[in-house]
Image (cartoon, rainbow, N blue to C red):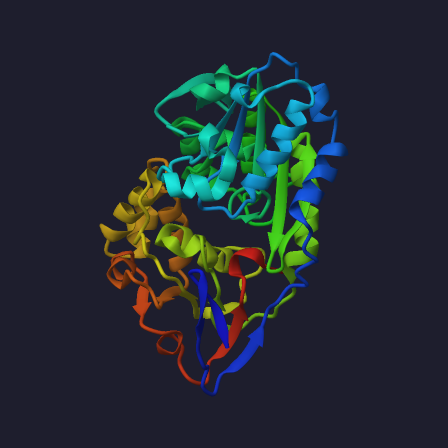
Amino acid sequence: MELPLGNGTVEFELQQCDVTVAEPDGGEPVDVRSAAERAVADPHGPPLVDRVEPDDTVAIVVTDVTRATPDDVLVDVLLSELQRVGIAREQVTIVLGLGLHRPMTDEEIESALGEHADLAVNHDPDDTVVVGEVDGAEVRINRRVTQADRVIATGMVEPHQYAGFSGGGKTVAIGAGGEPLIRYTHGPEMLSKDDVRLGRVDGNPFRTAVDEAGELAGLEFSINVTHGPAGILDVAAGDPRAVVDDLAESAKRALSVEVEGGYDVVLGGVGAPKDANLYQTTRAATYVILGAKNPLKPGGRVVLPAELPEGPGQGTGEQRFYERLSSSESAEAVYEEMRKGYEPGAQRAFVVARALLDHDVYITNSQSPAVVEECLMHAADSVEDAIEPGSRVLVVPEALNTLLV
């Protein structure tokens, strides 16, 4: 068998194991440019050309390197549409929605945006402007975004531990936002709410908060995609909330798999770009353990091959995640301490600690085994080393793109 590892794969054999593979239907891939053009021509709500004026300045907030959004194509389609009403490239700024992740390099920006890389600037969470409040939490947005006459966003509507599905207003509210809203939405009070969970949009307080914050930031029009193992599955454009609802339904149809319980091991595939660091890789473990249905038996483990060339990760959030886990003796200690509160970015440590209360997580084939061990997880040289012969194993080839239900 084989699973994703970085930009390649890792091969392994599961000796004497009872193996089940959880592969969703996956849907059919679309041609991104054609689908994006159709979505912009038939959006949710008024078309983009009716929302802008020739003299407008425009901020387009796009996703960062941690999400495989085809931003080069989406931005190209948006610029062509803006040019129809007389808005020139020079009137457009592309803001890279980093949140608290590290800045993108010139090479990464070029790869993500192609010929439009010259329009891009990295978001600086310290250079933000207050635009209002959500549930008493201050909403601060990138200064360049607030200075624009019109705000547009791209996005990836994919399963998200807190928002149910990402995309929509989240690209701007979190990606181009400041620490206060991130502190509120990613704090222990919010993340402990029952309706804040993977795959849930309706009635999800996290989703509601980022949507409201996106509206305060002036976001009127989004073009988002959803994806699965086959590639990009669907594109929608227009009113941000409707776009997320539309693509979340597409994703659920393509990515859901019904599973039984009682497995000794869930073996998940991650791959690039998510397996660049431990912060992003652990999403796969928490999606399994804290998702709609945990298929592990008590004491079962999650095993994830991941390269981890960046170790824990290089951004502010990633470093806070690492500091919290590596400075504690146990998951129980981390969880109890962080229930009192924590700084933005450290929430992934809180969620990982919550998962580790009941299950071990093994990371195999990585370039950073010491970091894995420091963060209260287990490092193994190979998949075979992490799974005992005779185990009942559920293999999830695309762990971040599969909803276990």
